[in-house]
Amino acid sequence: MSGTTRIPAAEITGPKGWLVKRFAKKTLGTVPTSIGVYWHHQRLLMDLAGLGGKLKKWSECDEQLKSFAHMAVASQVGCSWCLDFNYFEAHNRDLDMDKAREVPRWRESEAFTPLEREVLAYAEAMTETEPTVTDEMVASLREQLGDAALLELTAVVAFANFTTRPNVALGIESDGFAAACGLKPLAARPDRPHVVRS
Image (tube, rainbow, N blue to C red; front, side):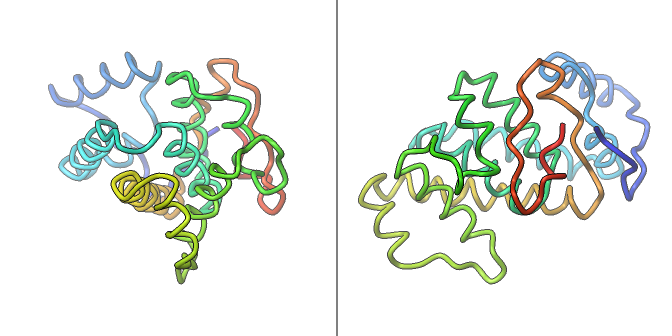
């Protein structure tokens, strides 16, 4: 569960705050700690939420592939909040939960198809500092997904990096969404078992 954040959560007040809390409770069952932290800069919070909403409308790339890619970034970066939230979201979207829970240990798991493994490897390669994406990775995914889907997948991985890294920097941890709806705990990533607790 969420510990102490590096910037204390602000009190979410005012008419806009009431709407934000109402929406969060309706869609998530609670108001995430992250909203309180980002409430110090409301325009930033609203813009991030707006961008995330726009990404959800993209449809060139398979939802499950995008979900797994986002979770792979969260696992690699160490963002327990994003990993937990995306596991919860996978459940809400009726994605393959047996596979979703295995994302943190995808290299050791036998649950994934060759294409899914390529997508997970691509997401991790994009997340490395410096990125380790190869011509061969892109060529293979272009052939299997097509240009539009690969561009969309790439943008989703970039967005995942854009959201996971600030959460880690600010000390925003899991709010326990997956546990609250009775999902099995995520599989432990061999080199970072503490990240997947929810």
